[in-house]
Amino acid sequence: MHELIADITFSILFAWVLGLVAHFARQPLILAYLVAGFFIGPFGMGWVKSQESISVISELGLIFMLFMIGLEIDLKKIVRAGPVILFAAGGQLLGGCLLGILFFMGIGLSLGGGAFDALYLTVACALSSTVIIVKVLYEKRELDTLPGRITLGVLVLQDIFAILFLAVQPSLANLEVSVILLSVARVGALVATALVLSRYVLPKLFHQIARRPELLLLGALAWCFLIAEVAERLHLSREMGSLVAGVSLSTFPYALDVTAKVTTLRDFFITLFFVALGMTIPIPNGSVIALALTIAAFTVVSRVVTTFTPLYLMKQGLRASLLPAINLAQISEFSLVVIQTGITAGHIRTETASAASFAFVVLAVLSTFLMVRSSEITMGLIGPLKRIGLRDLDHAHHADGGHEGGHGEANRIVILGFFRAASALLSQIERQDESLLEQITVIDFNPNVFRALNERGVHVIYGDISNVDTLVHAGIGKAEIIILSVPDSLLVGANNEKLVRHVRALNPTAKIVATADMLSNVGDLYAAGADYVTVTRLTDAAELFSVIEAADAGLLEDKRAELDARLAERKEVLP
Image 1 (tube, rainbow, N blue to C red):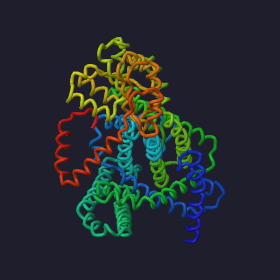
Image 2 (image 1 turned 180 degrees about the vertical axis):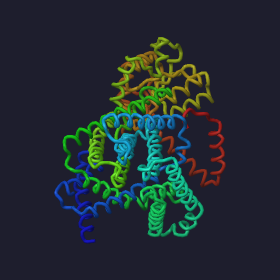
Image 3 (image 1 turned 30 degrees about the vertical axis):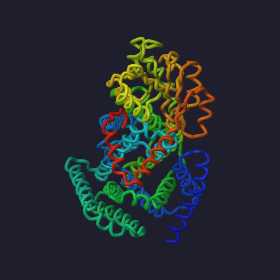
Image 4 (image 1 turned 90 degrees about the vertical axis):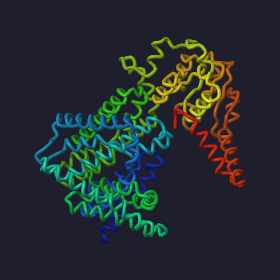
């Protein structure tokens, strides 16, 4: 016991120290935890030698990690995902697994006879890192963009795929139809039991203790370990059980509260898991490094092929097809979980597991760099892809000879970028002066917006508003009114001030309307050449003040009814 406590002390101390280094170097924390584990483990300084300690630390961290992953799987989002995300995820997973099996068997890795190195690497390479992707997309403010939503949808379905693999994994050595069916039946029984209890029993219990945070936390932990132990008795695994426990609580009325309460413990035990994983990584030899680089190269290439292709076939355009492929081009922390279960079951060699861990580290660093610069990389790839014959959504515009003045009155009012404010403006124009629609051109690179506006008869050009060539070819030089409707927080590769300067240089006489996120930006936009600047917070403030007045006068219900009637009349492109 004293030895275990000392080992945990070393693990947390060095994870924190190297975590600080990773933070200042803008590298993933998971990478720091792996390095910390290697440094203090038996292959490093040897300060933690007990295999039993490493095993206990790893299993506890794994159970908590899968429980939290389960809590964050939103089944409702999968149902609402729509065909694009489902088709993209299906193509990525099926294509990735097919290519993986062929590739890894082709380089001589085993599949069968008790050794399943090729299969585990295939599954590992098919999964992408939720931690890295969400962190980078959040920092870039791209979670709510179309490529961001596609990326997150694929991640959720990858987690479902991993769940199915973990269900079958204990029976790989004796993989017969009857064994598979028995495993599926056990998982079905476990999931059904967990869902029934979480729907009909737990809400009543948690309602009684909702005001006692310590009991709420304890109840969540008890649920996690109970289902984990039931899974163990069903000859599945505790890890599988903890994942099911989390998924069963994901639609629970107290799910957000439970997640908030368990987050601190999650971070603690996830840190322990990755530190313990780092302890198992030996000093690599040449063959391990070569295999790791091979795994990393295959992951990037296969992800681009299997993600870009289905999205392109569904006519999402080159940009919206390339960005998710770049976002997903790494190995998941869940992949390390899969590899670790394979080590425990004796299905995979230590050398192969070590190579997978090194490939994870390489791709964690590389993909962070690529994602931060994904817009520039995408713009650089679109030209060559067009030259080899791939069509973008703007090909019809170019085929028709799209150029300045080529659409008559449609160029009088140009809207650069199309988000919710532009969607509301279009709806307002339809209600008040529909004839204006014939004078409007919208420039945007969201394929959904492109199709929706085309269907409504609005002239739309598919292109990047931060690209000067796009503005020139769109005929912006002859526009009379130019509206920049997208705030800086959502623009990619530019901001309103730069766009105003570009537009003013191309068209000295047009009336330019820009959007400001902050009050301090208003003067800069006027100095850049804008004729009018909208500040949405001012209109929001006026609306909120009128709500307060209505509430004080006892007329809030009437005001709400008025708003409901206005909303019912609107048919916007974006919700």
